[in-house]
Amino acid sequence: MKPTFLKHEKPLLTAMLQSSSLETLSRRIKLALEQGAEAFGLQTESLLLEDQTPEVYRQLFDQMDGKPIYVTHYRMGGVRKKTDDQIARELVLLAKTGATLCDVMGDLFCPHPEEMTDDPVAIEKQMALIKELHEAGAEVLMSAHIRKFLPAERVLEMALEQQRRGADIVKIVVAAENMAQQMENLRIATLLKETLQVPYLFLCVGECGILRRIGGVLGCCMYLCVSERDKESPGVQPLLRQLKPIRDNMEW
Image (tube, rainbow, N blue to C red; front, side):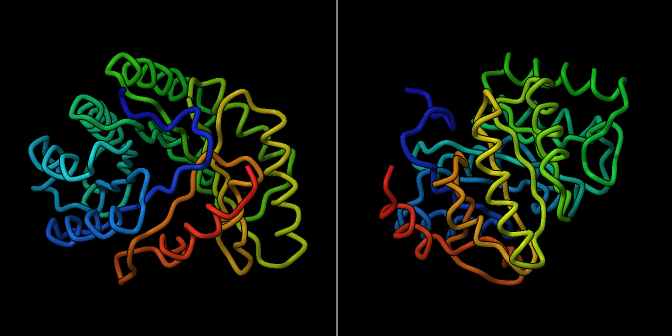
């Protein structure tokens, strides 16, 4: 059966991979498999430009033991030298190379402070890209990294718009700097579950980040985590070995 990020009984433990070293990535893949990773997330923008090739992608994908593979190609690292049209073509290449789930930024083709463009031309191009990714056999996640607290109405508006554009999975990253904001984010997570017709990933940065550890109970379709930490691994993502017991011991 083809790997998928959709319709799993429990939120997938997805080991995120971010490094410019292929040796480091291989080590982290092996470590994540030993720790119980159920899926992988390769942040291809962290690779050196000369390593952003189908051959390298296949080499890394082949090490992932047939698990579902989520890929990003964000505007950072070596990707800063690429246009948004080049980023879009790279996503199609990744889909054809074997990626399961491709991340389309919500402001692709027209950068926006909240990573959700309202430019009609850009939106049409996004929808055409999503159609092309689907035709290439990939699932599509649309992401918006706001990294600030947003009221429920705005989060729901953005999530519904991502769904309308054709995303199979909605992804929104906000922030919580105090307990009141954290409690509201937990409420928003349940609202997303009640409102959306597609799976979602609602994440939080800032001082209060419990959502990354219990989001699955509230409806998030996966957990993003890391097998180890160093200067290239985001500290905001929980360690897989610490997150797995939390996920496994929840009632589903």
